[in-house]
Amino acid sequence: MIHILFIVPYPELREKVEYVLDNHPENKRISANIQVLTVDQISRINAGSYDAVIARGFSAKQLKAMHPQTPVIDLAISGYDIIRTVAECRKDFNSTQIAICGFYGKIYEASDICKLLVQHCQNNNE
Image (tube, rainbow, N blue to C red; front, side, top):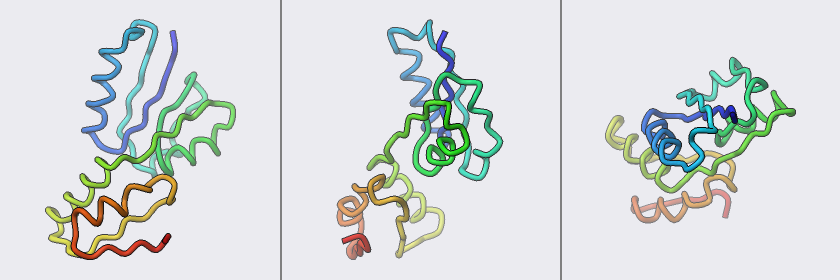
């Protein structure tokens, strides 16, 4: 049995992970713990009890530093994540100016997506 911890930042992503696991051909060999956590909750995780951890962004970086003996698989932040977040900001806060902050290598699609969604886009990495 392979014990994997998935750390996801929002419930909709949990549903996607559950779907993938349920339909994986080796799902009988995988024991998965899927937790919806924010970055500030990562320090409470005992990742050492898993064969591998799958997380992304700063959560993955923190886990790698805290548990160097445990393999941490870092998932990229997708264009869907960026679109979802921008739409949520617009809906919840009626925002017209939205900053997308992160490691450039992890959010490389942000500039292109921003140009599709808003009239003005400034990229401080270019």
